[in-house]
Image (cartoon, rainbow, N blue to C red; front, side, top):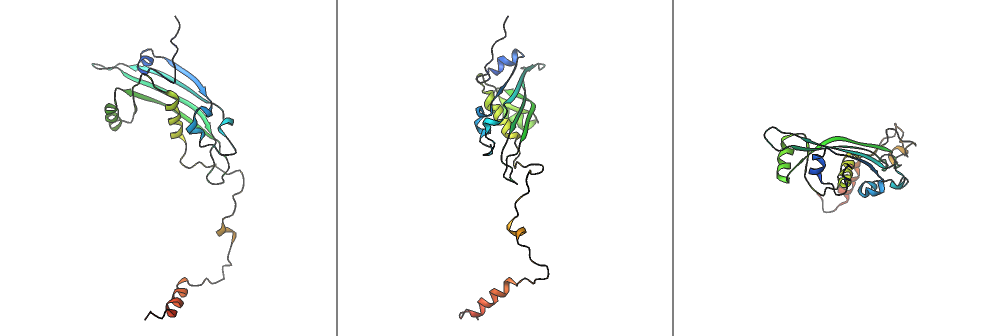
Length: 188
């Protein structure tokens, strides 16, 4: 008997879980357009290795109730956004490895999401796992991508470039205001 061919772009989550099925594959970064948008100019997504993923389904029996549907998602990917310190590409390893519970509707998802630490999603018979995986990879990105140590020395800022001698006395900024105030004929 042949295993049912599961389509990750239109996955019937309840049937996939009942079967206790597994899927694995890889997608080029160019097929993850929102993730590809973070690419540094010098490191386009076409040069990134593909995102490798694995999805394992499980139906957990519940005493006196409906079985719970879980999908365990694992993704290994790479992104090369611009380092916000040196403005060069920074190579980031992105990993996702966690279970997700699927429930009947949005109301149940909101209720369970508020009451537990589990990641909860709504069941679908036409679930786009690639879009979901892209969402998870975007969430795995750091808010501010930075090198641990930038590959080139950073350019000097204007403040660092102009160093004043320590013995030089700075003018009082309020002295200029006092001069202006004295020269204003309308002031008393």
